[in-house]
Structure formats: C-alpha cells, structure tokens
Image (cartoon, rainbow, N blue to C red):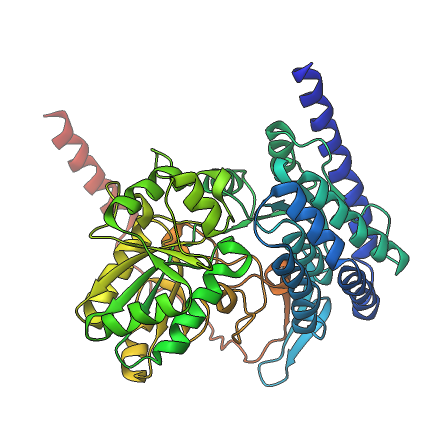
Length: 481
C-alpha cells in the first residue's frame, strides 16, 4: 500500500511540473503590465484570506500564535507586494546609453517552492508572489505536517491568478506529500530552480539536485546588549522578537550576550518585562525537554509558550512569564540550549566587552547558524560598525531580530527566504526577491574599434634545405650510438 501511495505521489509531482511548465510557457509571453495585474490580484486575495489561513495553519501545525500568523500572512501579502510591485522583471529592465548595453529580464521557468511547517501559509504567499512577479510558474512541496493549510493557500493564490488572466496550472501544490514526490520534483526536467525553506537535510538535498537552488540555513541569532544601549527598549525588542509567533522565525533571537557593566540592570529589566531566569537545575530540566540528545530541537515544543515548556519540564514559573532565559557557562554539545531554539527559550551569557561578545557570537554562529543573522543593541556607532566585518549576512541594529531580519522593521527586502551566503553553503546572502528568479540577458553594441595592422612578412631564412638535412643526419647518428 505504501509503495502504491509513493508511486501515486510521484505521478502527481510529474503532472504538476508538466502543467506548470505548459502554463509558464504562456506566461513568458505576457507583458509587465499583465504580470503586474496578476500579482496584484494574488496579493489582494491573500490579504482577504489571511485570517482563516492563519487559523488553519495554527490548528494544523499546533505551532506559534494565531494572531501573529495573521500578521505574517499580511506581511507576505502586503509588505512583500508593496516592495516588488514596481519592479521591472520582464522585457527591457534598463539601458546604459553611454556603454551601449541593454539589459532584459527573462523568467527562469518553473520554481519548486519547498515550504516549512513553521511559517507555512505566509511562506506560500511570499514564494508565489515573487515567482509569478518574475514570470515563473511555481509548484509547492509542503511539509507533511502543514499540507492542508499550504494547499489551501496555494489554491487561493491560483484562483486569484487565473481570474486575473494567468494560465491554468501556473501554481501547483502536492497533495500527496512523500519524500519520493519531493525528490521527483527536485530532479524533474520541468523544474528550473529550487527555492528551499526547511530543515538542513532538505536544504542540502535541494542543493544536491543538480540544478540552481536558493536555500536557507539555521538561524541561532545571537543578540548583544552593549553597555551604551537603551536597556528598556533593548529588552522590549528582544522579547518582542523572540515571542513573535513563539519564536518560529529563523531570524529570531536565540542567545543574549550581556555587556558586564550593565548586567544587573539588564537582568532586572528582563524580569520586569516578563523574563524568567532559570536556575542551574531548571536549565538542565528545560534542556532535556526542549532539545534532543543529537542536538536538534524537540519538534513537540516548537513554537510553544513558556508555560507549556515549564509544565513539560516539571518546573514552576511566575504567572505572566513571557520568556524563559537560561544562563549558560559554555556552548556546544555540553550545553544543548546554545543551539537554535524555535520556541520561547533564550540562552544567556555575560561578556566583559564588545570584543568578547564578537568572539562568542561568531562561535555560536559557527556552532549553528553560520552566515545568518546577528543583532546588536547599542548607541555607539563605532562599535556597531565593527560588526560589519564579521562573517554574518545580516547585522541588525536596535530592532527585534526576527522582524528586522525579514524586513518588517528594517529597510531590508521583505522576504521569508533569508540567504546565509557561502559561509553556510548558500548561493546568496540576500533576502530573496523576484530579481533572484530571473535571468538577465544583455544586448551590447560595439563601443570601440579593434586596431588592425598588416602583419609583417617573415624574414627570409638564410638556412638552406641542405643545412637542415645535414643537422637531421647528425641527430639520427647520435641516437644510434
């Protein structure tokens, strides 16, 4: 029976890829105006359906907070749309009259969108908008624990796109979710590029599929509270970032690094705003339930509030606790909470100065989250700028990390796929936009003449044929000896 289901899922994958490719060939002939009309209709439909899609995602996955999922859906539907709506993506993009070069955008073809369970409907909305804006079709491979809500979002977007003039089949989604079907899509000839958001294993598989791919790594973002920081705002921002949808965004804060001179004030402010500092014994108990022996996170506690975690760990926390904070003396295998935690738990370290904070931040990112995101709260611009040279793709200043990283509270491109650069084996360090999903061809006119000079005749040789024959004879005679 399982084999039959796998075969059926593989066939579905092939059918969806074929239909999307046929539709994309038609879409590739559309003007920028026609594309923009379709994308606008998709955005409008996603806004109108944001609430019930969020409810469906929360009910199906049991992750996060319903109200925050609504905000994420609206972020994908509105903020992303506002950022991309005036982009030129098809036809002539720009002309350089001085160098006589014309650049034109060409769709890549069909995108495979791998969707996680942590941000299922919002990521579906985002990937559909950026893919069609670039003139591509898209086929979604959902996480099995979020299949229904991802399919529902894809259907909403497909209906809106077709109603606005897009060809039928331009957006597809697997309903029979198996690894066999996902792998079939990755390697299918009608898929041109893979846009992967998910666990490390799936992202690695996407990069191994033999075609272009954009994948994202783990987050595990450290956040440094430097001695010049506005402490009350810094603490508020960190709690806001980590509790947004209960910490399931990959750019969310995972470790606090407190500058030693302000340690007592920061701890007092966290406690005043709902942070609970775990005792050494409580750290061990929380570690055992939140993390697995292999260093991963217990999926049952992804996106859960502090009360759920505390109850599972068998500890008592004050009423109104918003975040659990685990003071740690080290990092790595002996300190499980130093790894990425997509839930309402933060590791905590005290550092003597910004240089030690920098070293520790890099160590934490190398442990997990290389190249992803670092946040700093400081009023010292000289120190802030020191971190530009560090091996990380996003340095976020005085803002919630989770929301700043995706471009909600910063000027970064609004996106739900955050590249980590070659540091983490990612093909980009950008927040992915439609411009990553087009090919750019260039028409170039000659700008300078090639100077040509007549070749000088070879000088006549003074060596005769008889001389050459004599040399050959001597060489052959030497060889016979």
